[in-house]
Image (cartoon, rainbow, N blue to C red):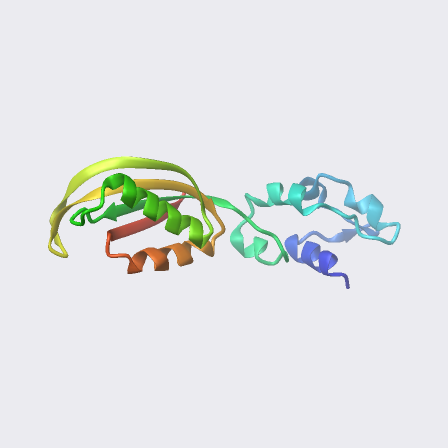
Length: 161
């Protein structure tokens, strides 16, 4: 069985009806059933298909080979400002580390300096920065590990936008 065909069959739980695959029309935007009757599976472009897959749950999207899904994320990072670096230098360094991990940083927002509810690692306050970026799901782990080593990063929190 063809790999593309296996992926499509796993992608949807539609049944074979009248010799064609029905139910893929809304996913692919084409009439797959009519082309299936001629013996060959309808060829589709992953670029067009990826737009439809953006809303698909990650469990189903993982089954499709060679498909890159870029999701939008936000990272709230609390910076330790006890060093000699300025805020602009720290922001540029954090953005560079996110880019090295594979993220496309789209927006950086300075939330401001805030005091903590209690002292944490001998710090009473920290500089909060909000980074908006697009990345693949596995990029978050690499970014988190890269920033966890950095002493200038006090806390990091990621969420899907």
